[in-house]
Image (tube, rainbow over all chains, first blue to last red):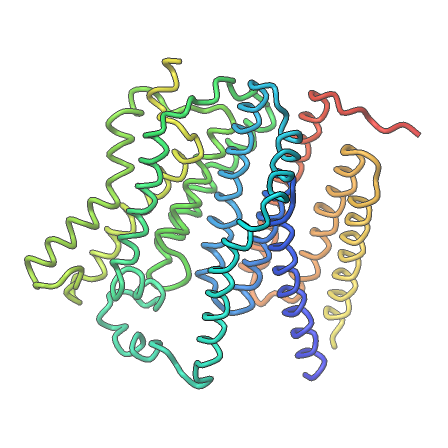
Length: 325
Length: 99
């Protein structure tokens, strides 16, 4: 037993030091591509840290969104930047060098932006040290009310019932990000994806599996780890894979049907919130007898919207405009 | 410890050796193609050995199935992606290492 706990300490220590080191390298790496790869590695190690902290829900979200989709988004932005710079006759490497030279010339601004961050870190550290080591937080309150929530997984109960407005606002943030990108009218990458038989086969094999996993995560969220964000990001990953393999949304679906899918999660959420407000006088307070059904409807629509938004973010431009250029 | 425990340890250690060799290859080999070669060996064989070692400790056939599924998915993704990386490197004109 003694040796086992020592081994666990060793693994946890390695994960902690590795996280700090990767974060440091990702922030201070002059090459953008390397920094992105380091960030993805950071996300994967962070997932391991969440697993060690016995938080599988967060671990799933971290690996799917933090490491997977954010990594894909960063890499696609990097590719667009590179194309943009190539058109202007300036290589990424050259630009990085210019940027890093500019950076080293302005240490004052570095410290100016570092000061609030350092103050916040000190404040947070102080706050954590002030916590009583025996506090149970709100977990007992959640456990006592779990029966009324309509689900048996406490994480889902918190995210979709007790603090449902958190999830409501998260979906709104995602949608806002997409609206922001679409408003910028970035030219879509003109070059077509090179058709590769291996990539095509991979997409064909993995897409049905990803659909299945997504549906499973959505369904299992009621009583175990999983839920709308995890399911949505897996479904979104299927979309990213299809886009990479050269598949494009048919134009007939790229207009209104796509837009309805993008907003259905948020609008269902708002509609439910308003209905509950009228019925029970409180925002998003579900009646316990119907809570299970309401949460299922909310999660299903949220999954569809999150998946569509994430895949659209990856594409980076309006799919109904890309054909015109 | 029973016989299956000893066999588990043996398979896990063998898997770890493959991962170590793959990592050393990734760090030390001279070009992208040879590095991919080293990496896929670690992923395919090393993970396969570790899956066998873990499957002997599994409590049900369902978890053995899940472990095998993980291995198959990594095989599929790893080989496809190393093919794509090598193809891209060839297209970009990355030369193969010669002694």
